[in-house]
Image 1 (cartoon, rainbow, N blue to C red):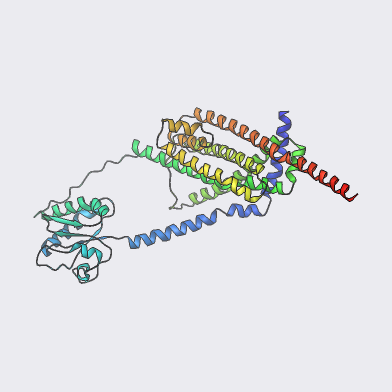
Image 2 (cartoon, helix red, strand yellow):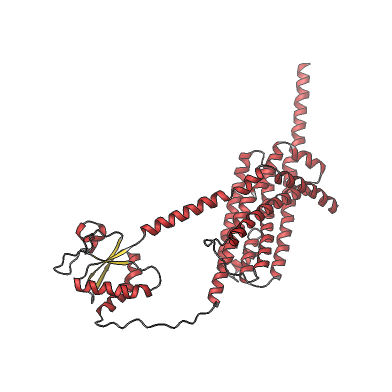
Length: 419
């Protein structure tokens, strides 16, 4: 009995796979993800350029002229040796006669003279003002800027007070190729990237199962097929056909990505090597994608079996989509808590298991847990397909004869009324 079901499932899978692959719409399906990637890349590049041009904060120096010059000299001496982006210093055109400079008004733009530099030119992105004196500097800025720059201003003021500041010593460098902290941090980044890629591919491709089943229900093809082969084989064949189509799409996109890497595109991120190595990690990635697709696709098949119209499909599929989003968040949350009950729950729960186990492959070198996880996920796929087929048989296949009997009854009553 089992071989007959497998042969029937193979016939359905081959039929649906060939019909989708050799259709004209499949080419547009392959090109579809390129447009958001191109648009997103252009938007990101433009946004980064705009942010770089606009976000150049400056700190205004409202100190006595001699102290202001020494503060600028300290900034020039220390800024290059400090990590990160150090804001520029600009000497403000302060009305000197005392220490009572209205820094708040200068930041708010209420006194035009206070926003002018010592050269008489307007100051651009004035983010803070240092007033008072070198011995007692006063930093006026927003709370986040104060916490960020308070220590830096104190360091510059301390160096500016030195009559003959000592030159910065030359630090000898002893570089290492890697460290435990860097390796672990890189593996976490690889795990996160794998989870995101798995989630996006699953959500992008799983909807094909639902649309295919609803289309055949509308054309009454599904009823003809269900009368010829077992319902379990029908569902299994459709599920694996759409999985094959998805793998073709993933293969094309992966080949394009690899081609870009070979061409030396510098903007593409380089991920750290996973704990199991890249070949096994990619193989596990394909396996877990297949399991995640089959698990989500079996749910969509059950939904498509219960729905009769496109509107019902959209209504019923929305909770499943939101559930998958919550599952992704759950697996991402478990990634930060390895070894806890949250991590184990994410590995055992069928929908989150592919995400959690792919993250484990990036962080731990053990292989046998993946074999157990793939077996567990495969069992859940079988159970989900059987449950979906039973729901389809009870909710759809039994409704046809009932409607037929009702129609025949109405026909007999109509003929009797005519007589």
